[in-house]
Length: 272
Image (cartoon, helix red, strand yellow):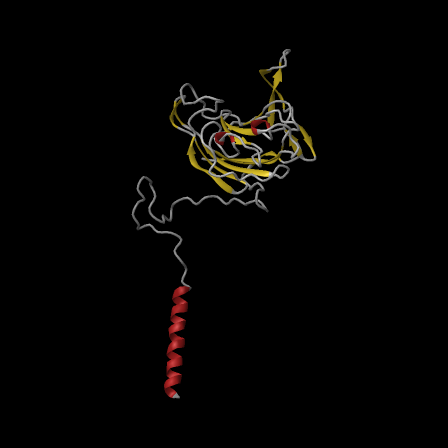
């Protein structure tokens, strides 16, 4: 009985020591570790600046606290359209966004629209919907697009039971790289894009490193840091010849659907 009591006492003392050791404050950093190659910081560097806190949206798809809201259902003031000349064609003069708002949704009708602000590296969230009874097929059915820096298109298209060319499907880099999978929902449902765009690197106004894009359609990854070969073209190849800006507006495409597609919940996070 005494042996059992002694054993229990030793176990209790051992547990107390372990508990005390486990509850010592954990170091918040170190100053005696090697420098990470290619940086000025040591491994677990106590002096390395910590990222600022960002509050995520209350539910998936809601804008985080550091996002710029481009459209939340109340107005389209973040966008602008181009004035039309006497011949009905767009000019180079800006006008207020021509798209109307219905039930908190932006109706894509009246020509393309551009953000008033210019962007380079960024994360974009946008939701869109095409109607089940939209006229046409292939590229004439539920078609839209988001053009980063006014020149690199990530395609929106009703790809549910609507065959078209692979590099023209939702989630593609238009005319270049098809999506990994077709992740669209049926027409009439809201679709969601989450896109991380890496702008090309420049030497002056010449591209020395291409743009890249990582894309999610309805939460499904369809592009993984995919190289963009150059500005979007139709029925032709592309490259980075010519001059390029460091930042430019984002353009949303009006592809003249009947009825028009609708947009909602558009926000952007500029990225360093």
